[in-house]
Image (cartoon, rainbow, N blue to C red; front, top):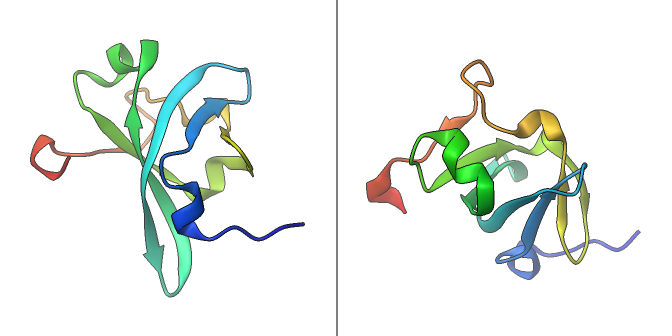
Length: 92
């Protein structure tokens, strides 16, 4: 297993485990020197699901794989009951 630096994955494309394009990694959220979540600039057809927000924060537990691309669990797709945090426009 190869360990990647956070700076190496910034800008990586994000796909769901079913192959749908989700967006691009913008930033890592750290808590006590561990990755807690990822700020993702949403793109493609997913934008219509999040009501106009430009990005979301996905908890690290939804990440299945990190390599040339990120693979996230399809359960990470935004819905009203998901608990995912939308990023306010002024922070993007």
